[in-house]
Image (cartoon, rainbow, N blue to C red):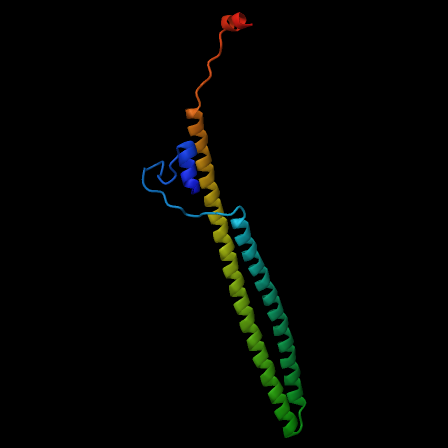
Length: 164
C-alpha cells in the first residue's frame, strides 16, 4: 500500500488531487527510505570533496611543471653543445606537456565540482519541496481529524451531582 493510499484510507485525504484546482497532482519527489535524501546528499558531498582534492592535486602538479619549465629554459640558455641543447629542448617539451595535462585535469576537476554542487542544490530544492508537501499533507490530515472527531458534551452539574 502506498503512502497516498494510506492517507486516503486513514484520514480520508486524497493527495492525488490538487486542493486548489481539483486537478491531478503529480509526485515531484518520493523518499521511500528514511534517509534517502541524506544518502543522496552524502554521496554528492563526497563527490564534491573528491573533486576539490583532485583540483588541489592538479594545481600542485601545475606548479611543479612550471618549475620544471623554468629549470629547462634556464638549462637551455646555459647549454653549450648541441647534445646539451637537444636534451634541454626535450626536457622543456616534456615539462610543457605535463603542465598542459595538469591544467586539463584541473579544469575537469573544477567542472566536476561545479556539477556536484549543482546536484547538491537540486537535492536541497527537492528536499524543500518534499518537506513542504509533507507539511501540507500533515495540516490537511490534522484538519480532517479535527473535523472527524465528535465533540464531547459536558455533563451538566446536576447530572454529575446525581451520579456522585
